[in-house]
Length: 416
Ligand SMILES: [Zn+2]
Figure 1 (tube, rainbow, N blue to C red):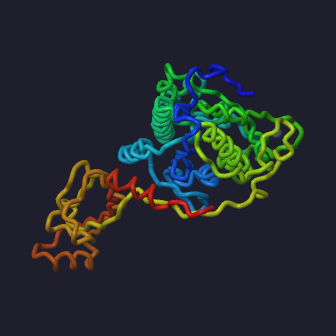
Figure 2: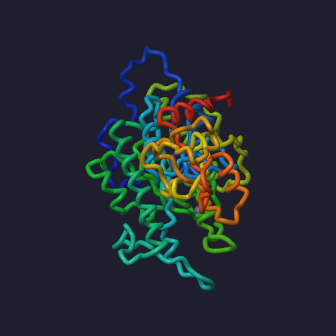
Figure 3: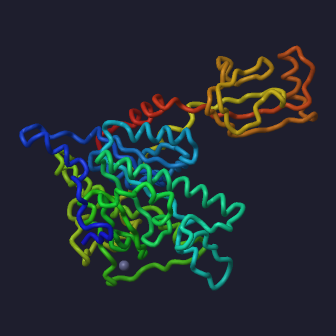
């Protein structure tokens, strides 16, 4: 069932299989505090599903966190170096048992190759010959591709890390996405491909209304059971453009797919000696084959997940610095610790040094007409009025240790 182009059976122990060595007489370990991380989580439907089967400490990671999130999501823009450091802090936690990644596929999508009958069509930015992006791209498109490539590089590193650490890992993208062929992702898997399964499936067989063809690359044998291709026994909603691109509506996983993934992960952990919650998913989510009568369950018919507010911001706090333009930093980032000069006022009077890696979130210059602000400055310092006043909002990063401690300890399980 598992359409494994790479190799039908990985030639290494299954992830966590080494844990079986603890022997059958020893008590089973509870998965309550085991950590599953969903990277590029979006609304974190998968995180919510694995939390329901007992992995209560699990979190999503994404650059944006919306009110629609179904589970705690740590806001990290992984294009930023500091955010990458924080991610690795999380991935090096001893209780990490699984990682799922869904790298953004906007620039790598084959949907860009479809020409609309009316209106503007998106232009392809990559091809089979140039999966890393056309060399002639310029401007915004070149920046978008470079930005995506950076994330693909991180995805490759994370997958390789998990394989080496024998942690469950899965990465998802459309089956024909150029993502798979980018050097940024694939270079990290050289010599490791024998450890991976390729599982292809159509979303319509897992609760979606559209026939989205997806590839899951992973090292968990149980997840091969997701390999169900459309049996043609139902109708599909159309792709294309109707006020918005249908592809953008299909980025969130159908709830049924999330539940099945969580159920299979749970089975895997049970086999590795973990005690999971009783399978509350029941027959509704059982994968019985191509004629699964539940494959047509639409997203709006699924039980709604309990909404959990976003977790921890990327910044410990945000302060405002106001002062003469020539004294207030102009760079978007503080490369090193910066002592606040006496002429510059900080909204937190206790803060004397802006630590390295702090980021400027907003910047505004008040010119000669802004008397009020300039007067305020003049009254508090016995100096002549400066020509221009610069006010910047600065996000101060967590230290990696504090961030991870807070992010992973804060939202611990209330009983489901
Ligand atoms: Zn179908």
